[in-house]
Image 1 (tube, rainbow, N blue to C red):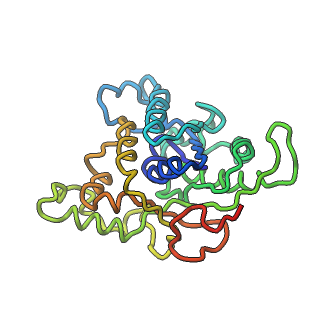
Image 2 (image 1 turned 30 degrees about the vertical axis):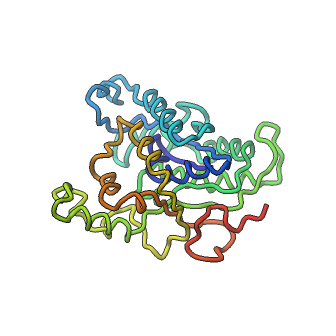
Amino acid sequence: MLVHAHPDDETIGTGVTMAKYVAAGAEVTLVTCTLGEEGEILLEEFAHLAADQDDLLGDHRLIELGAAMAELGVTDWRLLGGPGRFRDSGMVGTASNDNPDCFWRTDLLVSATELVRVIREVRPQVVVTYDDFGGYGHPDHIQAHRVTHYAVMLAASSTFDPELGAPWQVTKVYWTAFPKSVIRAGIEAMRAPGSGHSDSEFAAMDPDDIPFACDDDLVTTMIVAPEFLPAKMAALRAHGTQVDVSGGFFALADNVGAEAFGTEYYRLAMGPTPSSQPETDLFAGITT
């Protein structure tokens, strides 16, 4: 089970992983916490959907999410508490972040209980979410981290609840990760003459200054599945109002190559100590 903050987050960080395990016959469940109503819109024809205009972006992103999941083969995808239950919080310092109905401001027990309901229904062995900084500090990502860990604990409670179901103990929890070495290799490739991206803002960055860049020695697990990169890129294109696969971070796919971009990285936050590092299977060490 994967817990993400907004539509498109799941594909950016875990698209290859999801497609790989679906193809292998594993049960894959995606839980998205908000509809991403406060997102910036890249396509001019959908500009009127923005939060400060018609405020219908969430409905459109739900459609995009369904199309992306179809590309990855994921059939069990849900909105935490149902569509629109928790609103996109936007960034710290914005008016949307002060909205009492936003995900960031929601009582932790309220939102975690909604996730407990899913955990006890689906009974996942492995749960994936963000680190305690939410990858890059977005309030909804941080809240997804908090909600996930609290829900995992609550779901294992010995108390039976007729509405929430029987207790369930998740075996492993992972955090998504983007190793600095991979990002550095991509930046260097983008800087090279003839790359077509040497003048881009991303090419000028230092991996040490990128908030979501993770020290390599913290990475415990890597899922290597470049054969599913086409599905991931198709899913990214489905998130058309939010993602431009031709530039920025996504240009790494062209410069680093399918083998690198078709690998996704994780940090083991809870579970049995890896017998080797890095692991190459999220289910490594699980015997039942």
